[in-house]
Length: 433
Image 1 (cartoon, rainbow, N blue to C red):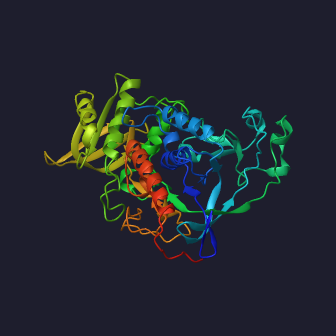
Image 2: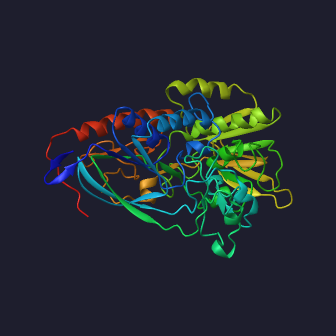
């Protein structure tokens, strides 16, 4: 380390966010010899990619790309320090000499955990699974997901009965459960910070006309992805939430709340392809099924044009320009009555379906969970690619809606830019508390 106005200058890099962008940036940096702190707010790395069934461009299961990267993390273990349940609470300093304070929430499960699952077998408390967006449940002690890293259980102390129960403590033969764990704080000295905090699904609760929240069989696109995933709430079977009936007819509603000044004014760019992909899931599972995709504008750029054409060539996938105006439930059958404004033909279309899937957009996490850092963001809350404070580098979907492959490419670029900042000799202003 050298000196920077009396403060130690560091070549270490902090990556905020342990999704696919953060993981990519971290392993690229570590493999180039840099010390990396990879901080993730949840109990595991993997982000939203770990919750998917398949992702573009090859329609791979997430186990494919994540396991390769996990192996890279293990090989670079002397360079990468993984910090889960970690939240940045203060960041000060300047490029080359940032001081970042992270608060580490207690997991209540220590490193002796072997993921044997004996604890969940005796836990009497169920909780809604945030990974399944309310479609499934876990016990109060649970494994974050099938591709968790670290592969270690965690306890939701908001629902756990604690020492009043302690059945998991008795069941664990390895002494891995510690109900007395406390939160801690650590301070890191780093030269640059990569912001790879990702995105959250837009809240669909305001879409009353589309039946979300009032019709059991109206779900969002991220919920549909979980239904199709083998590690999802139905073990990959696409079933109606109301009664577990296999879906025969599904309607996919594009721009659900997006490109709408009352909700989300922008286009998230990947929703059209995601819906077509999910229509393909349904057709693969049930060759007798039918899917309707109603869109305002259909977007499939670059290499994805062939995929769009292939989906449109399936006679059981109807891709039609139209705006879904209303969704209502038949109280007797729980079927859905759908009213569509036929944009090209004029008039209205009416139909029934087993399931409606709303393509809700992507919202930057920095908007819903701000960082203790002055970021330059656009009008929608996404980090601007340029103009950030020296040493601060946004990456992936923190910068804007994008697909997984593009996010990975961008994260690699962010790693290079972080290194460039570390070795910059330009005089720069510092961040104060």
